[in-house]
Length: 461
Ligand code: PA5
Image 1 (spheres, protein in one colour):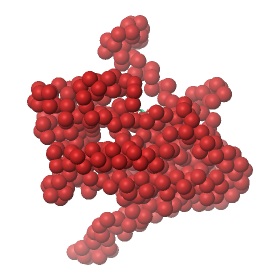
Image 2 (image 1 turned 60 degrees about the vertical axis):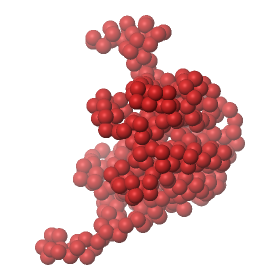
Image 3 (image 1 turned 135 degrees about the vertical axis):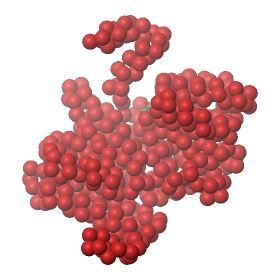
Image 4 (image 1 turned 120 degrees about the horizontal axis):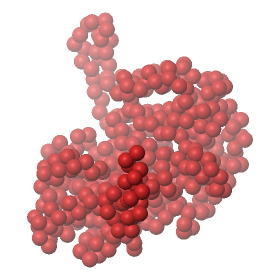
């Protein structure tokens, strides 16, 4: 199981201005946490609670259909192209990057065991889109379009471009190159899929985008490129079992949620840094950034009081960002809590050859890159602590499906518990709507004419 080491948030180590009396805080919040965990588990099946992501580890039916479809199309496509944005792609991308062999798309087919390359098109930059679509042989590409609402402008405009090209290339048969993941009943993509006869997968009711990674949203693209999704699900189930424990002393999601909440509200640590010491976990940090930001950044609490709360999440990758952000983390404002992720065992052992005797670098010879990256993780943690910067370390034995299932699920539960502590709605995102509506207005969507003229006035200012 993954572990959390939180001793470096202790006031005895980083000082009372920056740290917490953990034993005392755990005791004070014991009952509150117990109730929160019990309540989340009681409410998870209730419609409208947006907690059904807690059931995704047990969705045998989806798992079966995903695997069946993946084996049915195996060998038919050279590429998988995922279209989507935000919660519809961040989780799949994070897991693909972590679980596939690094540089997957550059490997020869035999090295990929005959599985396709995978591309996530999660933005609408005309240059990168054009380049990618001109590079891929679309006739040999399976396009997985993912959108819960079925109407997100970014995703649907990508889809319109790709569909048009596919149809021109393949005629009526183009539909076999498309698989849609969307709401079961509602939305334009559901309508189109039914009219055109696409294969579809469902984003379950009461599962929001940023909590959807373990539905077909994340699992289908992974299965299409040969990732063992059963391993991931085993990780989720084991973590779910562990996190059902209502005792804060035994529940790492509750501990980290409470630590973040208290550091934010009592110690002015308004930034939460996610810093994996693993390039393969780079996009896990991106995924976390969205999860923490969109879930907790709210201007109203559950009682209707104005609040403006939520920590700002920040991505950093070790060791790379030691040469970019560490100076700020150590000596800049003491307003952060850093989450290190430390990997126990890498897949490869890479030795540094003993080829130079210069004092400045000779010591590296004969050691391994593995030793070096973990030495850097440890020394950065200690240095930050010396500077009295509170930090926690999430330790994962290996970057594999089992541990990634645990890690992402743990962070989801942590977010849900933090939302309860802040007393806000963790699962909505009203603040995203304003800009979306303005975009609709600017792009001439019917019904948005009034906003369009107000907007044009504001844009001249
Ligand atoms: O987490 C969320 O809810 C959002 O990031 C959505 O996933 C994102 O806006 C995309 O929405 P949709 O899946 O409806 O296209």
